[in-house]
Amino acid sequence: MDLDTTFAALSDPTRRHILSMLLEDDMAVTDVAEPFDMSLAAISKHLTILTRAGLISQEKRGRVKWCKLEPDALKDASVWMQSFGQFEAINLDAFETFLTENKLTGENS
Image (cartoon, rainbow, N blue to C red; front, side, top):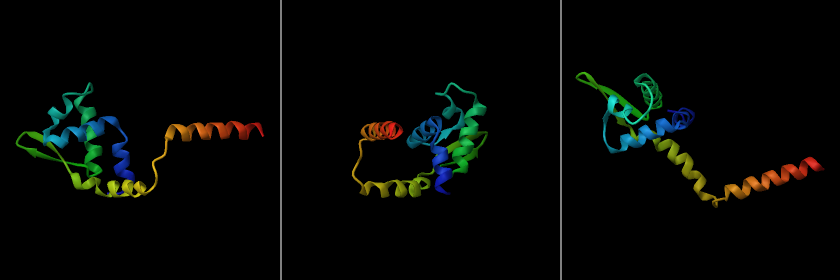
C-alpha cells in the first residue's frame, strides 16, 4: 500500500485505538465495537478503511467476522518516519513561537 493510504487510515483516533486493541489478539467485529459509543455500522466503516489500507485483515469464521492486525503493513510508514530520526529533535512549541513572532514582525514591516 502507499503511504498516503496508510497515513489517511491512521489519521483517525478511533482507527488507531482499534489497531491498539488488535495488538493483543484477533477480535470479533462485535468485540472491537464494544468499547466505542457508535453504531456497529460506523465501526464497520472504520474497519473497511483499515482493511483497504492493508493494516488489518478480516475473515469469516463460522458466523463471526474476525479482525487481525497485519503488522508488516506499517513497515513502509515506519521506515519513512525513522528517516527523520537523523535530525536533532526540535521543540515544536518554541518553533511555533518563532514562526508567530516572525509573522508578526513581518506584517509590521
